[in-house]
Length: 478
Ligand code: BG6
Image 1 (cartoon, helix red, strand yellow):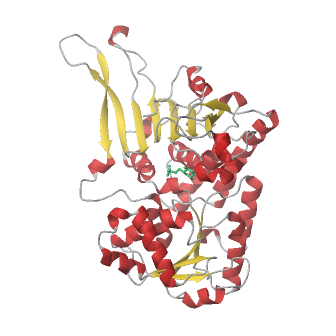
Image 2 (cartoon, protein in one colour):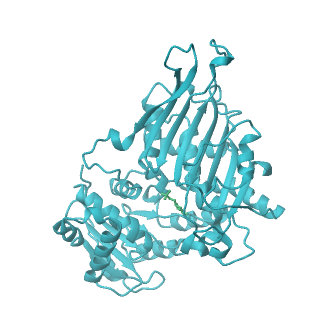
Image 3 (cartoon, helix red, strand yellow):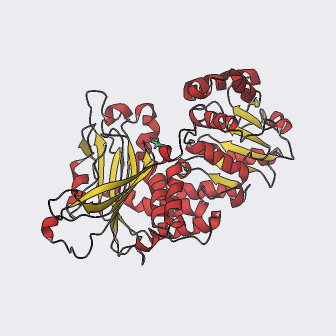
């Protein structure tokens, strides 16, 4: 279904995110027929460039990051014709008049702040001061949304001077992933799971976001953040919320976000022994973390595992184990719900026992598996084995060329549609920092050092112990 006509301004229009995600994402939506041809996309950045230059820049970006979609040159050119460019000075006056002249008052207006958070306030002020933003304009902001509660509050206050909460779309691209939305469909579109989705039937939950890449060229940013700020405070927290929240009364932005907020507020502080931090060593195929960030004394973590408790009626006593890290054995993100064993085995101990496990895989191959117990086929008596009930979303969607859309595609279209359900509300972000800050302050005060781990492994030994000592184990990274 096509969205309404719109003007989208991308501040940071020549940046890495624009090149890799935003422009290719818009192109895909254009190819899918979702973007009306009258819509306008305006790149805005510091570099002096004209519209032709920006089209050439975008053409290259599409060839690099969406090569399979560029086969029809006519379509590429038709998309590029929607683009224009303004050289803009975020902290001065240059370019703003020109930008004002490009905007059409009678269509949806969205401003994408794909720039350092330090510039959010400047952009907001100028959009307002030059009479460009209206009460109906929407702004999109990227992470990192602050580095602690105080800075997040400042950002929220800065934006709130010029925009209402209904105008602000804070992106967490994990919420745009198809499987993450499917998690809600699975939970609330079936009768099968919800009655069992609680401490009485769930033994524990694992959330893993494992990457094989290191910090690479992002060392300067990353070393000031670490896995806790870069991944847990936002992406893993969002996953945790969607798993743990109560059913919202409807699939509407505030109903969903209210429930997520309650989960964050119910999180217990995490004890020091329930936190494992790690840093990757050098391997055959790459330098160590310390070499990559260029600081031999850095104590920033490239891996973190946590045992977390949601202190409410539904989840009392059910641990949520979270882990994320770089340079691990495999690129794999999944949510695993491990159900309790049946209370009594009528088949006797010799038959074997096992538990139902629901695995929701975000990447690489999106899908869901439910492990169920059946009888081992054959005449050998009653022996129980586990078999997977598998559903690959790609297969289920058929081979109609119906590629899984990238998270950004979905989210940008939601901005145009004015749907905030998959965006973080200001109070959610603040609550997440309020939980994160004392954990970070704790290990800083204790001067805890991250444990070194070998690249291509499951991370530090202690993270395995985090589950072993509870009689559990992580799922293999594969
Ligand atoms: C980003 C982090 O938000 O998410 C990166 O800053 C990380 O460090 C990335 O690599 C992971 O996203 P995805 O979609 O590749 O899992």
